Image 1 (cartoon, rainbow, N blue to C red):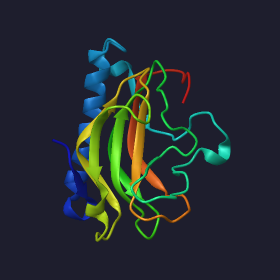
Image 2: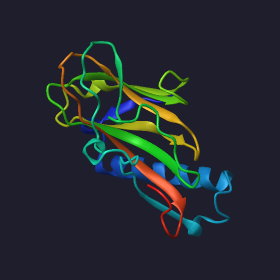
Image 3: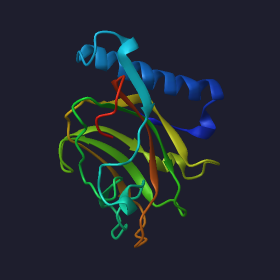
Image 4: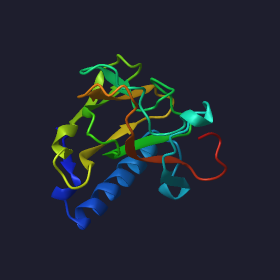
Length: 180
């Protein structure tokens, strides 16, 4: 069972533990998939929201939130990206920059935008928090070569985009970067 913990409800030690758990989950999965033979051959870095589309769209933006209850991709120009063959993604939290708080649900899906739900988090727990950041009780790991969708559900129709920043790490073989 996965759930979201608002930043106000966790300690600095907990924050470090969320990130450490994400790193460990990524390394464990990469070794299981035989991406490399040892963890020393892996590089763990922050995810860049860049899928080689128009530079103006390489940001943590949704499309304009036009209808309440509608799901919107957090990747403005890509509904369901596919990770490169040498990359594994580990998501461990989320931050909502837009005010007023425009979204109510964060959904991770396998495959296309209408694919099976892998994990879902109630974002409204952050509405009355001092910080609109939250951390997942368990990281969400996406394998290499996998298409996936990450969506938020609009709770208000603003007609403008929402800034939804995912806390994510990329685990990949050490060495020259093949693609983002």
